[in-house]
Image (cartoon, rainbow, N blue to C red; front, side, top):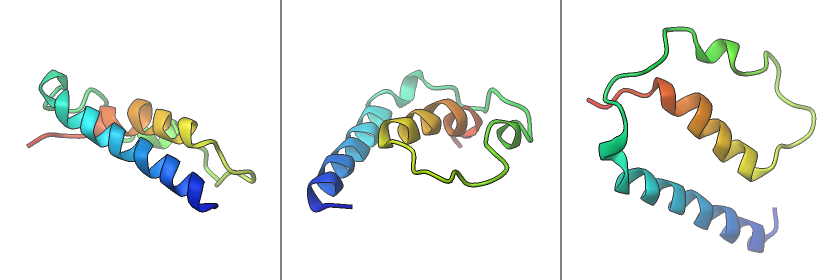
Length: 71
């Protein structure tokens, strides 16, 4: 990864985290999915080609965050 890409993706990650903290009051406290839900949302094997960073952040929001608990 080139340094300009690192800066771009690093800023995007910090923006995601800042948006998360700014809007945490709008998130559910308990997960909205049942145990094992994530297992069916992700491939059983790693991809052969890299995914775009935008797709990775989208997966975090759509696949990881629904199962997060805020205690």
